[in-house]
Amino acid sequence: MSAILAIDGLRKAYAGGTEALKGVSLELDKGEIFALLGPNGAGKTTLISIVCGIVTKTGGTVTVEGHDIETDYRAARSMIGLVPQELTTEAFETVWDTVRFSRGLFGKPSDDAYLETLLKRLTLWDKRKAKIMELSGGMKRRVLIAKALAHEPELLFLDEPTAGVDVELRRDMWDLVRDLQRDGTTIVLTTHYIEEAEEMADRVGVISNGELVAMGRKDELMSQLGQRTFKLFLEQPLEAVPAGLEGWALRLDDDGNTLCYDFDSYAAETGIPQLMRKLDELGIAWRDLTTRQSSLEDIFVSLVKGGRA
Ligand SMILES: Nc1ncnc2c1ncn2[C@@H]1O[C@H](COP(=O)(O)OP(=O)(O)OP(=O)(O)O)[C@@H](O)[C@H]1O
Image: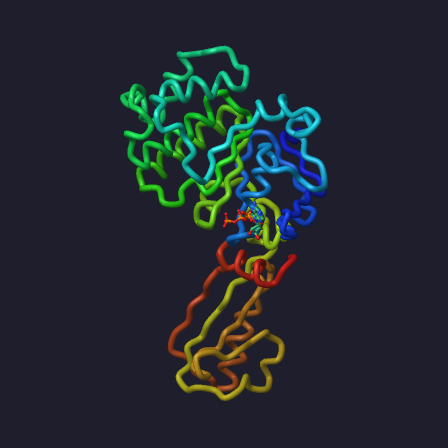
């Protein structure tokens, strides 16, 4: 599959000296949904803004379907749609004029039938004659999406699309994203909501402090970095892990009342049956047990805390 977006060694140092991106490289395949995860200030918006031509990079290269975003700006930009984090719409314009104008900006011939379908899809058709300032916050967000899609981009960026959005719009947005993917659009979303990435994305990139610290298919990341924790709630607390249990990576928790065993959840042998037999031999009694698989969230937290994976 060919890359629709190729980013190589991307750097950004802002005027004040902040290094927002420290050499990020990634490639996106056509038609995938890619989630860029990262804590506040990680560099997500900077990355998107560079690709969309809003912020100038200080190093590296970016191409969109082979078009360099600086030397071949027009061609690159016409392939991209951006739904920004902040509401930036013309208050006095009508919905219809805003969306129509947006399409024209990219030199696309007018296609009112397409725009009608788009507005209907976003339940904005009834509001097409309303001025933007008369709309609710949720409706304004729908207009932003319509604007971003007005010129039929092949690569759509959604920057924190569901922050502060109601449940209905959120659901509509994900339905729309899935439909767009079906039509071959590539989608990049940034989010703080890990469940969202877990549900929507084919691949996930984790950015922390200007560096891409992990990247891969969601299930691959979970299998590479995932752990399972097995917990035994003991009848009697222990002061230390008893001799004879050195073969397992055990630790005590909850004032010695819980014995925890962290193991690679994808290992062929967990060693748990042997551990249970050994505990029996040592006369260590327990009253209950649980196991827990680490989620993308645990992985994310440990990556962001610990740096490069
Ligand atoms: N215009 C600017 N001038 C100077 N520094 C900036 C500017 N914009 C962003 N930064 C800094 O660059 C770093 C990355 O910011 P960026 O907005 O890209 O992060 P983010 O991952 O999008 O965060 P958030 O999730 O909070 O939007 C931060 O340290 C931020 O303070």
